[in-house]
View: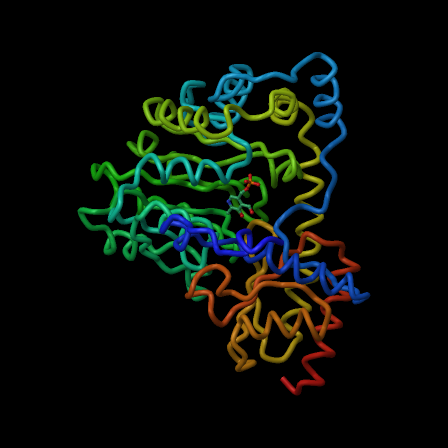
Length: 397
Ligand code: PLP
């Protein structure tokens, strides 16, 4: 490397405020251990270990042969926007217009674009902690003030509407909700949402509602803030194909929001990605409108694994694990082990060969917890539990 290339490049100041998603970093470390010949069981990554259903893959292949290989409109193909509008209206029970839909490469860009479109420097955004780390990262990146609200084990990780309302100031420009939740597996109760809707009514504060796990619920039904009187105009729904149809690598998601904001988000698409891949969008129509049986099969398999992992973790001294009501994560409390989360996750990876995440990967209020994904086979989950149990007994935890 030349001397010039070795000198540090001067980065924009905002880059120092950009966070990350530790799951990807732990995956890299786990792969490095594998390269040294160690066998690692992966319970760190948040993606279904199922194949994308064949009828969706076939629709994409057909679309490629049919010439869906060119640019399309930035907001998404009209056919897919219509399908998303119909699908969303179907699960929410509220009318949705295709003009209110923007299709993006994954659900994640909706976070980025909505925060970019709504948050100025110094504006406050309320977000869940522990929560998906990209919320905090993006708020800080655009110069906003990230204001955490808690998701607590003693409330079964349900939202406390009072806490959110107490934290709203005249600088609050956005509230972020996520249900079912990553990393806790918690699901917001209808009563909790109703209380929040009552208190937000008339305040004209936009709410980003991340519903990416909406079909992975094991008890009860999914509820959304958009279903409450007066809230649809102020709710921006983030959703997508990644988790529901095991399509993480396709990069396909969407946002549903009032049409004036949708036009701005589409313009951000024009300025960044141009559009989402056209043949993927054609397959997306098949995903939403074709055979839905794969979703139920996957959910029932996750339900089976959930019992195995919760039971197994509760056998380990110092661990105490609630039954998650949604998504495919467990968030055991490990305070009695007296380890801190990050160190425990590291030791479990390096010494027991099981990759998981420390709770603080999801914000400072995740201390005292670990996150395991149960998107792996029952056999691998059982092997991972045995490894952790035997490691913990050698360490006299
Ligand atoms: N929202 C939450 C809560 C997630 O956990 C994830 C992915 O892990 C996403 C959004 C992003 O999903 P996508 O793959 O559609 O970008």
